[in-house]
Image: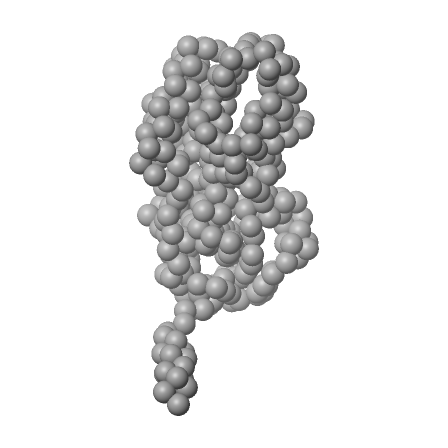
Length: 311
């Protein structure tokens, strides 16, 4: 009898806890007409599958799928002069996914909204917790709607109770000459192709089990450097990826190398450098100054070692 009472009291306790729908359903984060200057709601859509996402986006859905897409809710508003304002609220598996897809998009002018946000060419974007939000005006004169776009984004942000942080690993990248918004977090080859084309095949063996950060650097010396940090699931998988890349892209026999540090110049004037710690692989590409490439790789390796020592 006592056990039954304890079970019932436990059930009652959990049922009595307030449940916030916005943390699991982007539909509850959409603004109402009264929150958008009383503009008329003309359409609301809820997308819950990859097939529906492909139909809605008509291109580009594969990138969102590569960040563990879960749901999307869309609402369109129409102003008295027939302008259309569109609100998209995406939900992903976790906050790292939302942060990652955000780093794949144009950021523009910084906005103090969500975990991070920006306004670029008529589009306000931000991520917060597991959610990514985009608000934009389907109209040529989008700049005249800047205020309503940003204010609507803030309405959506207020409805999202999720919280989250960006991956700690991004903070170890060298800051000198790092481009503004030059850090990108992702997992697989689809995302890498959208940022930096290496070759037609997946020579770095990226997939949904890898975690990748790309840093982009430039300076007045015409430095154009891409720095990749890849975390593989295990040392053995990292070994395999290292061997595959050196053999199939650098055309080096890995058995003839000493250790895991590699530096090679490829035609036309492309320098490539590799280094490794445990199951992390560092890959750098630079077209002008190999000394700058070596410096950045060395800095990242030192920062990575310090990061791992603190874990």
